[in-house]
Structures are given as C-alpha cells and as structure tokens.
Length: 125
Image (cartoon, rainbow, N blue to C red; front, side, top):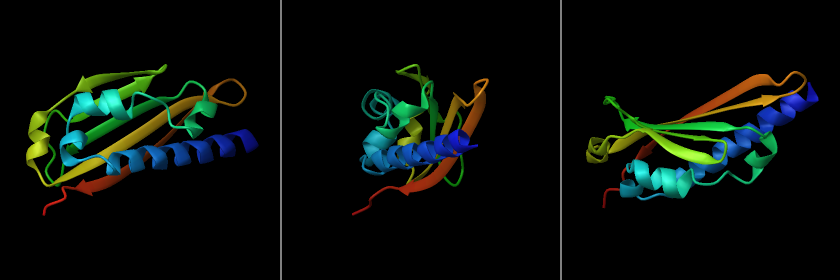
C-alpha cells in the first residue's frame, strides 16, 4: 500500500511538473508537435525517474470543439515519438491538454495509471 501511494504521489508531482513546462511554452510551441516532442517530452521530469518504466501520453487539441487528429506525443523507454499532428490547432485561442501517465509498480509489477487535464489559452495582446 505504501509503495502504491508513493507511486501515485510521484506521478501526480510529475504530471504537475510537466503541465507547468507546457504552460511556459509560447502558443506556437504549444501547438507544434515537433517542438513538444523535441523540447518538452525529450526528457523525464526530475521526480518521474523513480517510477521506473513510465509512459507519458500528451494530447493537445482545440477547445471547445475538438479537431481530428489531435497532437499526440508518447514518451516511453526514454524516447518521445509523435503519434499524430495537426497544424490547424494553432489557429484557435484555447487548447485542451491531456496528460496520461502509466507505469508498473509493487509486487507483480501491477499496472498503474494517472491522468490530468487542463485548458491553456493563447496570450492575446
């Protein structure tokens, strides 16, 4: 139980750290799949290193009306890859950001998962 709670707390902190990285991006960076892959999900967050085999799935989509496909990047085994991209998302004023984490922990390597969602608006002068 203690390991499970510890893992969940670490995952939550890692998610918050990752979302803070995204909030610090410019609009052009936040809506660019290549930038997100190469500059945000290119490295693990500091606390996530203790989770072991962590998989992060980042999805960025237009809000309130989603478009298809969304920007989707998966970081697993230390490598970030673009699952899908959509340059049209940059034309909006708000995006929905979903971050899902999954890892194995505890006796028997039980699968664990945690997710967070936030909205980020374009900074309009």
